[in-house]
Structures are given as C-alpha cells and as structure tokens.
Amino acid sequence: MIDPRCISVLNSAPGISGPVIYWMSRDQRVEQNRALHYARFRAVADGAPLIVAFTLSPSFIGATFRQYDFMLRGLMEVERRLRELEIGFVLLEGDPAEAIVRFRESIGSGCVVTDYSPLRISRRWKATAAAALPVLFIEVDAHNIVPCLMASPKQEYSARTFRPKVNRLLGEFLIALPPVERVPASEPWAPTDWERVRARLPVERPAGTVRHPQPGEAAAIRHLETFIRERLAWYGERRNDPNADATSGLSPYLHFGHIWAGTVAIAVRGVMNVVNSPSPEGWEAIGVVNSTSPEGREASGVVNSTSPEGWEATGVVNSPSPEESKAAFLEELIVRRELSDNYCAYNSRYDSFDGLPIWAQDSLARHAADLREAIYTPEEFEKAVTHDPLWNAAQQELLRTGSIHGYMRMYWAKKILEWSPSPREAFETAVWLNDRYALDGRDPNGYAGVAWSIGGLHDRPWFERPVYGKIRYMNAAGCRRKFDVERYIREQKEP
Ligand code: FO1
Image 1 (cartoon, helix red, strand yellow):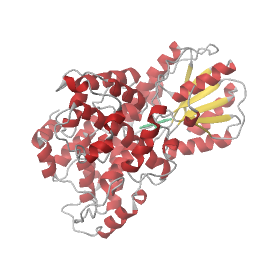
Image 2 (cartoon, helix red, strand yellow; image 1 turned 30 degrees about the horizontal axis):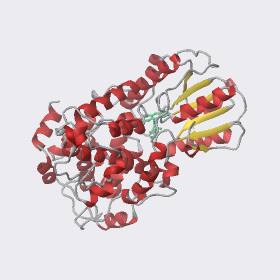
Image 3 (cartoon, helix red, strand yellow; image 1 turned 45 degrees about the horizontal axis):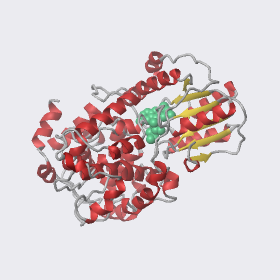
Image 4 (cartoon, rainbow, N blue to C red; image 1 turned 180 degrees about the vertical axis):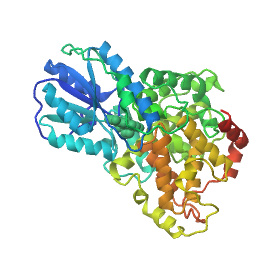
C-alpha cells in the first residue's frame, strides 16, 4: 500500500464503483509509480478496470517539438508496457481538464487518481477538474522521494534548512514498490495512433537537429546503470568539468518521470563496487547516505556546493573519494532537487523576478542602471551571437543537445544577467530559453536553477559588485581554472 502521507484528496465528491482512471501527467512510467500503484489498488479492491489516461495539451509552457517528441516516444513505451499488464491506456487531446472530465463521464469511472506537480499549469488543470468531477479525485506524489507537501509546510530558506527535514523522513519514503501486476478486470483498449498524434501537434519546430538521449523507462534504467558503472566514482572530482562527461545526464528522464528519483537513490546507495573506481577498496566503506551527511562534508570544507546538479556553482573538491562522490550526487539528487519542488509549491511567482528573495531583488534593483559591458536582445542570446565564445558555446550546446553542462549552465545564466538591459529582463530571457530549448526545461529544477544563478535563491548575499549587486559572481577566469575552456568551445562547434 501507498503511504497515506503521499496522498491528497482534491475534492469532496464520493468514490463510487466503476473503472478507476489514473490521469498520468508528471510521472510517465509504469514501474515505481506511487500514483499508478494507488490507482491499481483501488481498482483491484473494487473489482473494477484500471485505465491510464494522458491528456496531451496543445501547448505547455513554451515547449517545442523536441520536448513533445521525447515525451511522446516515452509514452509509447508506457502504452506498450500497460498492454502487457492488460491495463488500458488512452491519449486524450484538447484542454486537459475538460478532456479528463468528459472521458470520466463517457466510461462511468468511479474515481480519478493523478500525480503531483507544484507548477501553476498543473494546479490549474486539477482545480478545474476538481470542481467539475462528480467523483472522488485524488493526488499522489509519485515524483518526490519525500512527498513535497510532507517534507515542509513552507518555503524553505536554503538547503541548510531543508536538508534535515528531508533526511529525517528519507528512511520512511525511500522504499521500492513491488512490480506492477495485471489488473484482472481490465479490458483491452484500442492502440493509440502515434503517427497521427505527432503529425497533428500544433507546436513550434525551431530549426536545427537535436541529439538527445533515447527516451523512456527502459532507456532511463540503462542510462542509470551506465552512470553508476562508468561515471559515479569520478562524479565528485569531475562533475564541474564539461569536457569530462562525469554528470549523470538523468535530468530529462527525471523531468518526464521516466524514472523515479527513489530508484536512482536506491541504486546509488546500494553500490558497493564500481568499475573504473579510482580506489575500489573505498567503496567497501559505503553505507547509507546519512553516514556521510552533507552537513559533515560542508563542515569539513570538502564540498562547498549550493545548488542542484544542473546549476552547480562552487563544487569544490579535494580529490574526493568514491564515497564522497556518491554522497555529493545524492545530495543533489535528493536535497537540491526536492528543494526546487518546495520552492515552486510555496512560491507562486517561482518563474518570475518577483519570486526572488527580497534581499536579492533590492540589491539587483540598486544596480539596475549600472553600465553593462554589452547588452543583447533575447533573440541575440538565442542565436548565440554574443562577443563571448564561451557563452556562445554553452548556448550552442543547448540548441544542439537540449541541455547545457551543469557548470556551464550557471555561467550561461549569470552572463545573461550581466548583458541584459535589466535583471528582470535577464530572468525572463533565461527562463524563456531554458523552457524553449532544454529537454528538462519547464521543471521546478530549471526555475530554481535560474532563480539561484540570477537571483540568489537558496544562496546568501556575497560581496557587492556592479550589475550583480550581492548575487554570487562568476567569470570566465573561474572556468579556465576548472577546465579546458578552449576544448569546450571547440567541441560545441564541431561535436
Ligand atoms: N503533461 C501533461 O499532462 N500533458 C502534456 O501535454 C504535457 C506536455 C509537456 C511538454 C513538455 C514538458 O516539458 C512537459 C510536459 N508535460 C505535460 C508535463 C510534465 O511532465 C510535468 O508535469 C511538468 O513539467 C511539471 O514538472
């Protein structure tokens, strides 16, 4: 059974007998999906069929064909897997709230279950559906490890305040679910015509080819296995080197829910030996994540990190051991990622300059009129035509691959602050480009990342300087000290 602390009731209508619908949105997978498990439990208890419905919205926060393509190919796998379990799958087009209400009526469903997202658009869909559904409507946090609303009842100030809250509950929620079994009462459903769905998608298809990872649940697991086998041991040492290929690359899979963060955490925590480990004996000491608490690492000065994996600024590492690599990765996977959900859940202006901490807004406003070394329009940023080859390389990486290496993402965002007419416009440009081109854009992690880089979110005031005010500064010299900048620039031009 699913822990009731993962569950919220969204309306006051009764659950009645009839098919159960799982309205899938954020967690687009079959295994390790608490919402699907809960819906299945209700269906089996009632002797009723279970149908998974995905409502395909004609627009989603600036997403273009590259994100829809990744998502739809993942959903094809969901449909295939569900068919093997004799669970129905249906793709509904049009306005999501209206579509789900109509569909429920058409099959006489007695209960609708959905997954959790803190984003406004998802909340709006659910609020509209909750008002119109005449049957019980339930939300299950299938995305976070510790359910977002359970981890904390308020917006957290920083990782330092959030970490103990998550760590206290981690043992109670980091639990693998059993594999999904057939639902006896379910009937076969007509297969989705994916080609027709793709052809009709009314979304923009910006020019340029995208080389991105294979989508879907199976690919996500393979990606995780490769990361653990080949890169995890080097993560602490090399994650800030964009030429080193040491980061997990799991972000798009986590965004679309092709994999549960808990699956990743359990696998990483369980690693006792790693191929290519710099010191294999080091792995023998690895226990649970709490055994090397991030507080301990910060106190000892080994890791001085302050942001999610994708937006890391100052990961300072003195030849970390594989054990420290693992703890550093888990800190980002669990604490920093779930802190982003906390930000979006409790700050309705998460994607705007107005959502930033007041000290940061005030400080940036005081420096809004400072002389800039250059000023670019959003379109110039988009086309990667600034005076700085390093910045252009990061933007080229985004255009080509749908992602920017974690360390460079920060440089990318901070220079947008430096070269925009105002901090507010900088924030809007960074969010626009990230939403439009990043495979994992439109995610709480992306909004928190931009807010961290440009607006001091979850950070502290630093020394005052032009344009940045008290926002943490970053420059190309810092990049040069960390990695071979010329090589990175070259490789973005000739991938
Ligand atoms: N969720 C849906 O339920 N329907 C959609 O049509 C849809 C499109 C979409 C496009 C790009 C993207 O990045 C996400 C999209 N999502 C969609 C949802 C997404 O999985 C998450 O719910 C949110 O991004 C929250 O993190």
